[in-house]
Image (cartoon, rainbow, N blue to C red):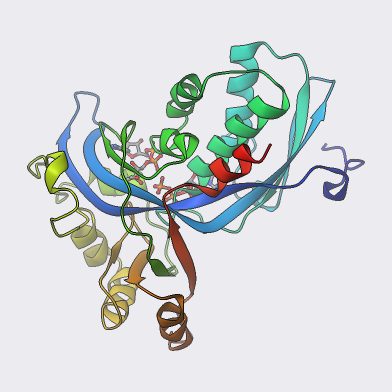
Amino acid sequence: MKPTHLHKSAVSTSWPAPAKLNLFLHITGQRADGYHQLQTLFQFIDHCDYLDFHITNTDDLILHSAISDSVADSDNLILKAAKSLKRYTQYEGGAHIWLDKLLPMGGGLGGGSSDAATTLVALNALWKTNVSPSKLAEIGLTLGADVPVFINGLSAFAEGVGEQLITVEPAEPWYLVIVPDVHVSTKDIFQHPDLPRNTPKLDMNSLMTQQWTNDCQKLVTTKHPQVANALSWLVEYAPSRMTGTGACVFGEFTHSQQALDALAELPAHMRGFVAKGMNKSPLKIRLEQL
Ligand SMILES: C[C@](O)(CO)[C@H](O)COP(=O)(O)OP(=O)(O)OC[C@H]1O[C@@H](n2ccc(N)nc2=O)[C@H](O)[C@@H]1O
Ligand SMILES: Nc1ncnc2c1ncn2[C@@H]1O[C@H](COP(=O)(O)OP(=O)(O)OP(=O)(O)O)[C@@H](O)[C@H]1O
């Protein structure tokens, strides 16, 4: 039974856990353990989950969250992250954590990984455990392939399974992100026989000049008409593609008003939001304000 005597209003200001977009996603091979080698370009957007932390002297780690109905505490990446940090540092206290879940789950926006990264970064600061960012990223990688980039907090070209990061500074456009009403399982997409797995490796010099594409998009749009429909609608307004293994798709606009105008035309059965591309993540900005 979770204690209810601590309320969110009693705690410090929130920590953002931003979404990411994969501006392109290439699958260049597969490791012996089945994991896929990727080349991708990560950029953050200013659309976030928010977490609040209240540090306790007792060693409980307790999550207060509306997603507890769909994600068991034992699977929740926030509690897994807090436990990993506590174990690594042998910190004796604990924390109550409140999650305000605003990012769609399983949409390719990396919300779970971002929540885990924010938990590691915030608790490391609040517990004053002084773990280096590179060690935090190493702990984070055991929780999910996207956690290191969220800890690093800078837009990056990534290789490996997404953990080898080189900071880059793409343009920071406005995006209209559409959230199709379907959950795409990352695991199912990576296991599918029709997924292309040997896109030639790009070198750093051609990153910014080549046309950005997503190797999972063809398979996902074939399997999920909701994603195909969202993309066919969006390409009429802007250059558009899918993020991660879907389901979300995004179109890029130079001015916020163009993105808002397109959003205003969105058919009633589709859901979407406008967000700004950010090469420095809201989490990094928050950490620098401490
Ligand atoms: C596709 C991306 O969204 C790109 O940003 C991420 O690499 C996905 O990362 P993620 O959601 O954290 O994925 P995980 O939870 O680590 O993996 C889910 C499942 O997808 C498969 N998987 C994942 C990442 C990867 N590079 N190769 C894989 O084959 C594995 O079967 C794994 O069990
Ligand atoms: N704090 C969390 N928030 C969201 N999902 C979580 C969390 N903890 C565990 N999960 C599990 O992780 C799954 C994937 O969630 P997430 O929202 O990160 O997917 P995603 O955006 O598709 O990620 P990616 O782009 O990395 O593939 C969820 O379906 C849920 O079961």
